[in-house]
Image (cartoon, rainbow, N blue to C red):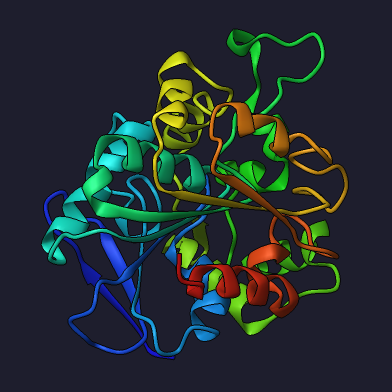
Length: 288
């Protein structure tokens, strides 16, 4: 696997390119809410013959100096510019967590760029916690350590890696890919290192994951193949993002929806652990 970080089109998202340099339409891989393009390292390594473009979204990693506003539709505009600069044409789009929602927004706005959607533990409206309205939602509390780190400083790289090693999702699944992802997230200089994710981006994007009307219309209008892979455990290796059977209910909005259960993974290790990434790569590599 090769990985090359470059600037995309205007707006200038930083893009990691995996795989061979070729003229074939690249797969577009879209990361989650506080993540970055290097979250796709394990999946891309299992697709050595496929070119994969993995941007850092606006407000994250090497794209964190790009200003707001943020939001799913703004990210879709940015990604459409990247794909247009890559030659346009319909291709497979994969998205994880919030990135799956961005993939749906992109497919709704620019169906000419999307042949298939592969959504990884995301893309369908989340259920609000009991007794909580959308206006009162605390996105940071729901995300746990991933959000807490945005207000923290770290004296050096090792301290930041130790923070991620202690995350319950990686208790038995630490790897070189997780380390690369974490290092790509760091911003600043020692002893004042911070996560590169803009808190404002996390908050604005997170508020759109609960099914606003425009997003339900976007789902309803999808005409391409749609596959969603579900992790049985969630962000903290406990309750899943989508309970069993929850995704199948969206078949009323997306009749072509196909749900794939991925055993023994959580919301992170469905991408980072080989046993999860292999299932994601197999779905991505499948032909319609």
